[in-house]
Length: 625
Image 1 (cartoon, rainbow, N blue to C red):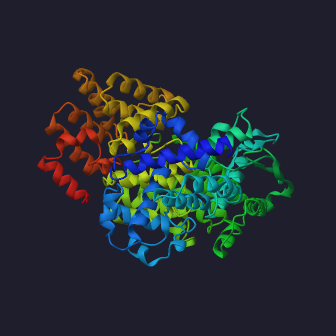
Image 2 (cartoon, rainbow, N blue to C red; image 1 turned 30 degrees about the horizontal axis):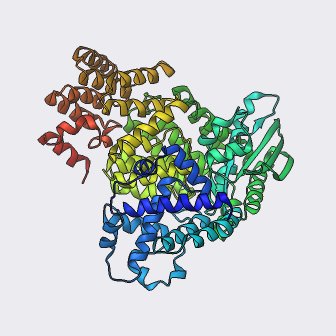
Image 3 (cartoon, rainbow, N blue to C red; image 1 turned 180 degrees about the vertical axis):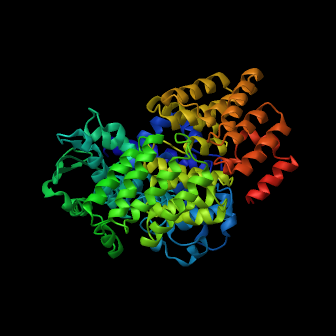
């Protein structure tokens, strides 16, 4: 027996035994498993990923579901009874996870022969793994009822290895080199890459890492195999783009993520008007090389053009590039560029959808120019037009969900739209949906989607894992993830989340330090940062400092500054335990329709207000159930 295969067998057998021993404990997770086997979380993740391609949370979840299938098969137990026996907190949540994973509800398990217990390819909102992982978990289920270690060894040695080579359909598109003489053409290079990524993301058999997760490799000296291992992908697409007026030269190379062998390479020398065809050809070739089977619908999407007007498309790419400066000026430039693009092609659905994004940007923390109501009302006609032009457009439904949530406080309507927007695993849509789930106190679902987003996009800058773990009372995991993330990222989002966590852990001086770092990034005193900083001062016995921030925010409110100022004044007053003042400012935030109001029942600083009649009235008026 190969020593490495034997070691893998022993290791996996040990993990199975630990999960089995804690099967009924719904709190048993990554932290507990790593402690029980004497490894750090990172060590455990690396070793398990190398052996099976799975994350630790995925391994635990799939083991539970496989055991659930075994218990359901005889037909003696209800889904609720099985959920309780395999560590799911509720039968409803178990039913959802089981249906997502297997493709049919628990009630049908007893009528399905064992050989039919395969799992469909990724469907809408599903969190299930690739075919190789699904095959592997079936063997885990068998092993749990007594199949010998030898059988596990034979599977790992002969079947799993071979299958992973043929069915691991995952890819990261690295930042292309911009070889244009005019470096201002960087936007064009970025736009072409994103178009290819968007096309590939629509293929359900493929897992495509998002732009935000590969950005950190723009100037890297790491090898292809190291990058592939860090991102958990089997292939990398790299290349360069050179543009000279209306002439475009694009070179692309598909590289094996394990061996670094060149799988395929091609060079295109075309006119600008042919860029759509080039993007589609590259996407089709990559799908073919990765053996991804395309449905007729996917083939249609792959060949679809957003616009036939090259100039309009060029303006759209510039607009997206400007927006990602995340500045007030960038948002204005976005609107100006898209206005011109839409004049050139009034049927350009993505341009309409992104126009809404531009207006929303003016109400965001770094825009702070418009109120949420004004921004969303300006954006709504463009959202409606985008969906009318393309009823399946993910960004259209994403922004409609955002509108329904933050403008209408229509929670059910928002969820419906968000679910439509995550069909193609759009990372921003997933992030927005996770926020929604946390708003609604559906924290177990939120952490499932946050785990999924992290698996799909391990370096997504605004990770929702930290807050979701916190709200799920998995504090040690939240802290470990946050401390690791803060070493990698120093952007606003990471400082925001880490400071929030420090505040809740009563590490007030650290919280204040991180909020100040976030402010120093752009030199902007964000009301959100000031509100939480004021809460940290209040909680740490420095009420004078807290009141100074209240005074600053009050003066900004008089100047008509935006940024949910009333909401965050309420946060500070609540931290000072001045409930009457806190409730008065929350009422003002409700009247002003502050952007942050959907956080009302989830904001920890308001936990001391939950039994107050006025707070209960506000919760009901907003439509929380």
